[in-house]
Length: 353
Image (cartoon, rainbow, N blue to C red):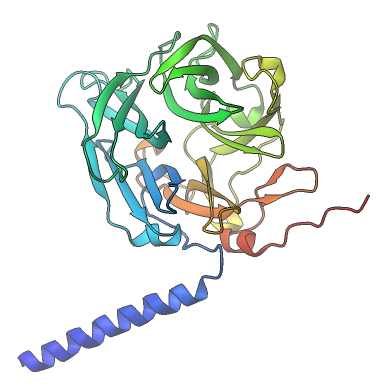
């Protein structure tokens, strides 16, 4: 009987490995499993100098920060999650742990995240952790405290980037004194955890697709290419109305001047029922293993109808898709294509002058 059970177990393992091998063979270059990782919202992937990929995202319990690492984007799907920090039992950083991002700055790793207080989960502010280890899944993560902004009312979704030797932060906060909304602010960073004195709003909800159920501009992500700074952001409620907009500015412009930014009047990525892609958004950008192909990491649900508050529905799954580029130097997110089709789509040829 024991021998029979052993044979059954060995056969099961062999079949499982064969299935995984077949799945891996079907994934061609720059293709990724869909979903890449289940129940992880607001995903952020970064590629370290040694080629290692690190993944960080919001967990559905809103109570901790975890990191996964792998030698490729696709391999993140099977990578174990290492918990590096948990919410406080009382006081600040005690509730609604949201949207962590991890960046390598001046030889240290930093995690920026949003958190409410244990008593008031809506008292959302931005906080930072730091780690001097080469591998952020090891070593000690140190609490650097709050990243304070002037408005300091509902601050979240911080991202950072560098252009022409200057580091910036973009984040979401209340952006109006007349309506309840969230808009995006930008400022210079005077250190990895402090903001410059000039902090300006560069976008707030104004179009119909940005104000469905809630007036929201949040989840900024930056891609610097072709002499421009492309800024994507998410809008409206976190259900099937959630979608991505885009702005851009010239890389040599004064990015703290709101007039330097140009905003599209239509979303660039949104629900596609035929592809079972509902409420895509809160994306980040990374680069593929070849070191040059841009990849968008984002979350979406595979169903439309949600029971209860969409914010507490756990099934926002992480997905990945290749970003193509139009002849005019702007990104093409392939709204009508699924992730695999987008990966295989041939980029349009530039017209000969």
